[in-house]
Image (cartoon, rainbow, N blue to C red; front, side):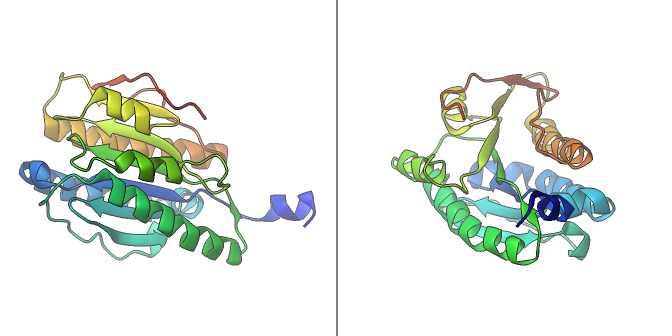
Length: 223
């Protein structure tokens, strides 16, 4: 394929929104669902953004599951609600994201899109309860894997700064305590959405430099 043909193709940023829905999130369940509905509404009414940033939403607790498969949000009629319960198993979530990337990216390429490296926004309010999560994370971001995602983390509640920094490859944010957890959750999702809007306008991935109510966390892994 020539460079000219490549530039004619619609660029697509596969976006994975991975959300902790363990028991500790149960008190914020309504806020989470309300904010997800607002995110869906914004994307569905912003065709330029939803076309550029195809999105998949993955929830995780004891086990992870796909809430919405990779799609243009303009074609999703409504946001399914999620229920919060269970443990905080990071590793299983990372395994599922890697599995889905190997399914989603070839499908997007087959649609004739110029597929960019994926981005994963990871939101959590607690520390991982599985001891082997780091192995799954290393496989997910293995530099030998061309499809490895960029990772941006948002932590609040009992999330650990050190863990957020170890997971992120591009940016890590920890709530600074200036607002309640519900506001911190909503702000994290809004920050991710704003990043996608800016990326669509620039036609390339733009990582959020800051998030209101959050402090930046130093990264251990640098891409």
